[in-house]
Length: 308
Image (tube, rainbow, N blue to C red; front, side, top):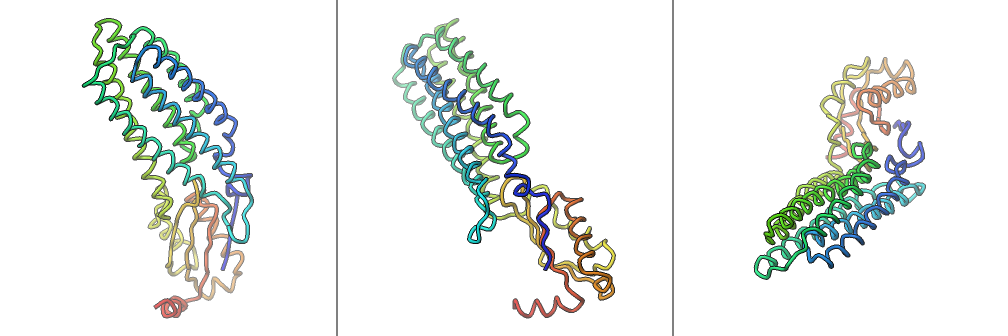
């Protein structure tokens, strides 16, 4: 049995998300400030859309705080009982973010429907001004996380929350302008519904990707068929079986396989052969943590009998 932990996230000081801890702290501060300003603005203007956007901003702050807490836990060293440490906590955090967004959507939709039957006079000018301030603050948050969204599911969740809140602020701006210019009060609950609808695809996408990791499905950017073909192309390899791939957390794919090799290849040096195969996997598929079991011809049948 051979193991190669390579230059994994654990070996380089934690997960990819850990490098963005400072930016997450700034994002939390921005989201919390936006929430306070929007709640005050909603109470003064009577705008449900502003209140809905405030609730969305609050989920941003809570969601990013969950992400930061998960990152902190993920930095804890592995133990004999938890050999991969607490990396998976980041994925649970992403699930909680998705569920939190879904709850906000239900509340916004329910409240907006109530406003149609029981309309409230809204001050469009104040609604517009507060929404503009919220949009500018969200743009700062997006800039802070601009290069993080593709590197971690946890950070992608944080980025998408801020992006959705920015789009929500745009909806409030439009609603405020309509009320300010035409006096049409229905623009406020309509803007609230738009904010709610913007939440749905983000919550669904984040939950789907999180469940994909929790089910230990093959990483989306790793084709096991291609992995098998590359290994079989290596000199001395005659078969590959029990090939599995999954993700511990974002940026940490793991792969295991039984590799049947010729007696001649084994005779030339077990260690050198194992290193060559693991470098093949790491170089072509960016899988730094691989466990490959080298077997002589005929062992696959014996192994199959043991698992029958």
